[in-house]
Image (tube, rainbow over all chains, first blue to last red):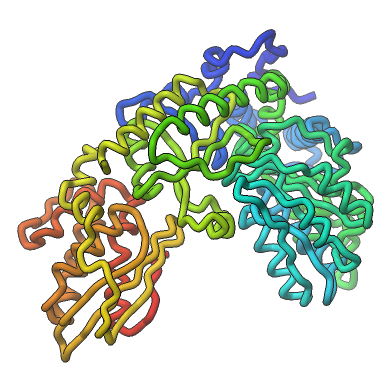
Length: 419
Length: 149
């Protein structure tokens, strides 16, 4: 069995110690503009622990070889490592089988895969697809294009001023015409944690399959796809402290088996003649070409790291950060939080009177504080709240209350400059 | 990184707070809409072109301090200028905000626009500063819309 030279010795930690955890992330030790980095842009991408960085480096240093092809030692070993990472994802999501885990470039590609394979074969003229008002563009545009092509309709579950889904409206949208529901678990622009169990249950009463966009969910909540009973679940590795360019699609085996391939080429076929091609079984049927091997193995290392931290400890720490940041930001005159759902993840979108989010972002950057400013790839959400953009501070388990104090200090500096 | 005060100079903060020519020009015969999809800056530029001369120019819209003050200063400077002079100013302005960090510039010929020389140190903000100018050019060329993308 393959072992990297650095198998991080990750025994489950006794108690969550944020200062100790921060030591695992080299980038958190660096200075930006002469100040210690305060990284509050975790909803865009998360930082990587040494164990992930070392795993990727070791793969290229010691093991680099193509998978599923060679009979030589390195190829066999890299195939084992690549498939071992798939098993880790399967366990992390509690899927029934590893063949239900398809590697993709990320959540976006996974949604596109489902729209263009399952969607194309199951959605016809007059049918309807339901999404929500708080979707990321990645969970709007693939369905919009599909609906245009099929002359189907895209229906949107509206939300309240607090940023919560209006479930009564969802009930009204569900009908015999509904053929698919695609819903975000945690909103990247508002932080809302959606009642996806209820969304799924109601869809299943009508035998409608549901895709859950877990791009933000996977790093904040314990995910159990069997318990959720979702039909598809997608996430990106880089938001889970893993490498960029790798993510996964979970799909129930019986659905995946019936779906046509997404891309075609090597590794996804069983046999090719010029007359006829027989496709491989799942998951390989959906993985054409040489995959992101290092990324997949790195993602496996990230999952190991999350297991070591324990998700409930992470959730507890993040809840404390959210409560503290909400309280501190609410104390500042002229700051308005956008998205005040009762059930929220550790993410705060805000606007300031007469100060554009981009100016907030640049001034905070001068203090070493990284936040996201803009529409967060959620233009319909911005339109819903009649704002061009927001500033967003998104927290991970390695953030601290003293970093939130620095954010507050930075916002006060913004007010001084523009006051 | 350069000092923040070089980006947010007094003139810029002033034009942001009290933008000049922030209105729709009733007599305009040229206009265009400018949009920066990255940050949502959205402006409209209106021009009253008489022969070859910009008799009046104004703008409306929403955006960050850099984009708003840039539009405000641009309208102040271009009023009364010819089309050709406006194009020359555009080229100069473009050079100021995009020239490589550390390169020598002749800021004296720029007059008030020199306050935007700090922008080149913030690559993500260059589009904010140049949006109004691109929109102005679109209006003169009667293209109706401009985008920084």
